[in-house]
Image (cartoon, rainbow, N blue to C red):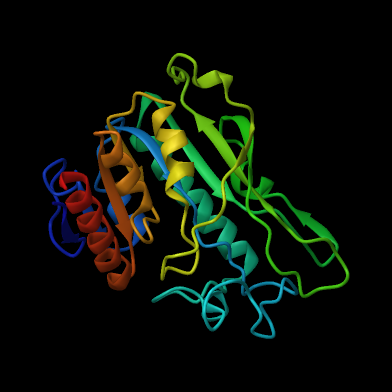
Length: 257
């Protein structure tokens, strides 16, 4: 079973990283990982939703979770940074993540487009200059729309940012670029990945070591272990590292039984 590690320690790669949930600041942890040592990166960062003028976040009706969990942000992070600071932070994470990827690696970076004060935020400020090879649309299940002024948002985007030698495994290129997976409904994390989505990504590659810079509830770890791969999970919230441990342990027990 994976054991949680604290980034406050003097971490040594790979023994303190592989199959571990590392509790610490994402940039601090990434900087401890050697160049070109990881096969694949998958993540969905906080979307800075509280720095928003709409989408139900202002009045407490912010989604399917009990008590509108996203309204309060994440554990230890309120999801409300000045826009420019948020862009700089995300670009720094992309830079460090691309550094640790092997020449055959790729980063599947999930985000959400929105219109803010009549300006389209397609995250171009974040991904500009990085080697984006493809944009994948993740179509989620429907939900409840409290705003009569626009249609129900049902999609997010995944930027496939690749190193030069990245290739899919045979037959994976038959998948289209619009993926339909319902969002995870039974998870205490406010914004979890569905396991099936991450399994699609991992199963489309021969990556052996997969890193998730914002591990959240441990979905990337579970999907990696489903495929017999290794993982590195990073999260600044102690609560989410514990949640990830619990979910992975439950998966491993169920797999044995």
